[in-house]
Structures are given as C-alpha cells and as structure tokens.
Amino acid sequence: MNVIEYGKQNKDTVLLLHGGGLSWWNYREVAKLLEKDYHVILPVLDGHADSDTAFTTIEDHADGLISYIDAHFGGQVTAMGGLSLGGQVVLETLAQRPDICRYALIESVQVKPSKLTHALIGPTFGMSYGLIKQRWFAKLQATYLGIPRELFEDYYRDTCAITKADMIAFLKASCAYACKTNLAETTAKVKIVAGSREQKSILDSAKLLHITIPGSQMEILPGLNHGDLSINHPEQYVQMLKEWRDEHDGN
Image 1 (cartoon, helix red, strand yellow):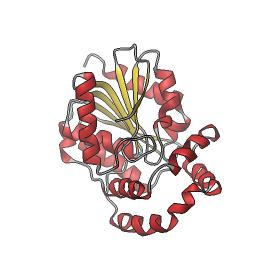
Image 2: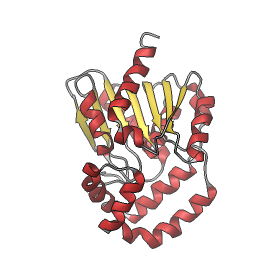
Image 3: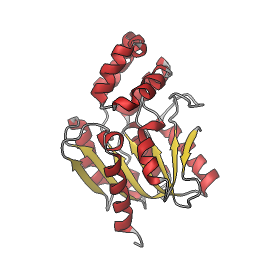
Image 4: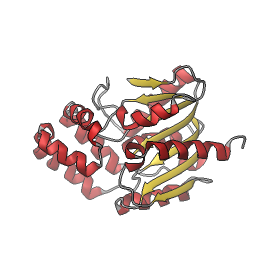
C-alpha cells in the first residue's frame, strides 16, 4: 500500500482515504493543517494512480488496510476519515474491525445500492473512457466535481493513469455497496456529513448510517456539494475533526 505521510514525529495518527477517481491530494491541505499535532497518513486507494494494487472489492481493500494498521500502528489509529469511495472503505474497515479507530469522519458516502447505475457503468465507461485523457473533457469534469484550479493538474495526471478496468471496477463496487448491519458494533465515535446539494441517495445514506451506528452524529452542511468539505474547505474539515475528538475525549 502506497501512502503519503505528514507529521511523522507525532504519536496520534489520523488516516484519511480519498474519493474515487482522485488521489491523496484530496486531503493535502487538510494534512498540512493537521501535521503539527498529528501523524497524518494518506493512502492511495487500490486501482488509482501510484497504487501498487489493482482494485478488486471494497471488502478486500478494507482487509488490506487493517493489515497495514496492524503492522504499523499496533492495530488501532486515533482517527479515520474518508470521502465517497474512501468513506465506504472506512465503513467496511469499521465493520470488519470495530475498534480500528477511536473517531471516524464519514463524508458524502452512499450505502444504498443502485442496480440501474451498476448496470450502466460498464457500457457507459466502455464507450467514453477515451475522453478522460482529453484536457477539455477533464476540465469539464473537474468543474462538475468542484476540483479547485490549483489541483487540476494533479487531477488530470492521476485520472489519466487509472486503467479502464480499475475505473469500472471501483465505480461498480461503490454503487453496489450496502450498509453493513454490524456497523452497530463499532466502538468508534462516528460523525457522518454530507452537503445539502448532494444527490438524494447520499442524503438518504447519511440518514441510514446515523440510524445504524449508535451514538453517531449526522450533519448536513448547507450549500455544499459532493466532496466540497475536504477538498474546498480544509479549515472547516479540520475544525470539525478536532471538535469531534474534543467532544468525546475521555469518554
């Protein structure tokens, strides 16, 4: 597993998993704000640029993440966070190992499967995959996704490096992922966030996760789109993470 690290001198560890089709730079500004107080780990998701592993399933990815945490951090980190696909991997990690972290921040995650979307991904991306390497198309996509201008070259480079097979695999896995009932067993303090301008499926998923995970907190952020919080509002993200930890410290 390839990772980028900030603040290696610190004891408390925060592990953040980027969204599908993005890379570790999704959390670059967040990591810079956290590195004074935390050891920040930014893994590259399987099947993405600079990853050394093809994407198979969210479950397999979570299993690999657990092995990494066992090997490097004694089986537990202070906090985990994830956006979209990365958030699904965090949830699956919590389902497989309920005490893998003390705090979790789940952003813009879908856990209500869509059979129609799953069926359309193969044919749609099979025909349009070549457009990804066109800068004009990448700029349209970046604008739609809310990628800031200063991250466009990172986005374009890393998107071009994703194979068609990997892209189809992780998109299918993401839209088919369902909320695991044993998430109710996690000992982590979980906060679930989504933007008010997200798709209904994301907002409904946030509600389902909140119901499933005892003691969790859900917050719908006014005016924000998918992934806006971590990508475009790093200060707000860090403040939310620290306040969530402070609220539960010692409990």
